[in-house]
Length: 161
Image (cartoon, rainbow, N blue to C red; front, side, top):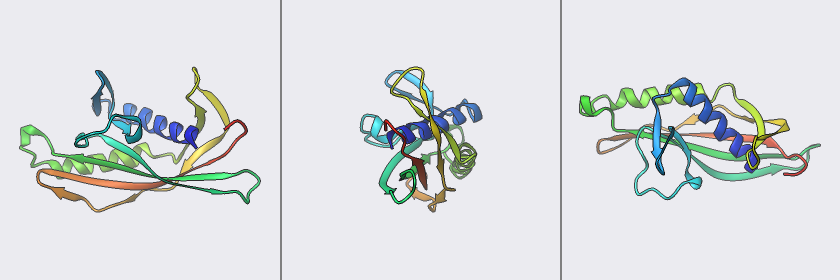
């Protein structure tokens, strides 16, 4: 499932960079598109604002098919305090903007499956695909608004995985 998870992340990362090149994050001295995988980064004391954070929750498989179908539940969390120039009073608008960006980068609901363990990435024969997101209600914590969306990500296992 690691190739599917990597392919899902890279698809969203590339789509976000094309959709909103201004949404970035500085990590380990490098500016990157504002989306990251929580278990691939150093632990955070507090999640960064205005960044999408992918968290992998659970794994399952259907082995009764001609090819094994694997699935993993993904939660994408994000939060904002709004803009300093507006004193954070625009945080509702900022959260709505991130809602729209997430919906946009999730479409289309598939991407080619690639192995990023080699350069250039090697293509597999199948796709990674996912369901529509299920959004949680917005949560207010002092000056911060946050939301999460859960998505089931699927892929067929191939030889060599």
